[in-house]
Length: 89
Image (cartoon, rainbow, N blue to C red; front, side, top):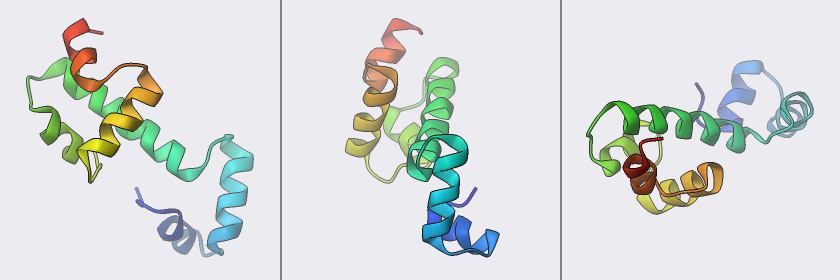
């Protein structure tokens, strides 16, 4: 999966601004919101199924910063990754 809207636009051979417009109209989300949602879903799976370090999971699902990962995870899930794991959700 392309990591930026610009990469996806290049693959689709359209301008980045038009890609963003179409993507938002079709999905109801921005490209970043969509990609972050997928990354958080994968992180939730890994948190449930493994005892892996949260930092390692953060990087494995495509985040480049633990602070950003924690912020995005909490915004989407409603709890921190560590609390999510403790609760066994």
